[in-house]
Image (tube, rainbow, N blue to C red; front, top):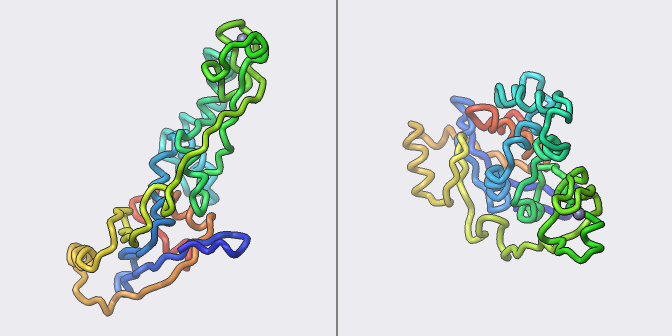
Length: 236
Ligand SMILES: [Zn+2]
């Protein structure tokens, strides 16, 4: 359930911890949290590497060699690219789902909104600007060879339902320690506990967490880089 009454919105989830084995077993969350988890699927790989590279934990290694690939992209002079635009686009990939993700309760992708640029010369001659645009102000116009650096806006409004952004708000969800998401059901919980070899539910402790955007972001980044969701170290 998202709290939007404070300056920093928070999402509440219930985490069930195995007190004996000291590990997170599963979390119960509403559509707001699951929307954020599923939004990870919309992130371009370059954005993920960039986000992981900025993680405060110095032990964090951003997806191994992909970190080197991203760094080499930054280091190679623009003259080695086909166009100046290419380097900019590769370093600043844009999610095609940005207009959906801007409706999330908490933002984990801090990529700025896409800006569009057109060729002023061609616009003044009456060419259809919707056919010729760039997301970078360094692109060369294919028609006249001029610089496409005039800001232009497109109507990119997305219709979002009354419930969540990606999932419906008809019920809660169960999120396992390794990020498997399923609709909430008692049968599902028992099946999960059985699979984990947990027969005594008295070992489980329920902890309510109110997570802000930084905590959700950190938990998601941890998940992208490790085999387990270390949500307890983030929030307890
Ligand atoms: Zn032009």
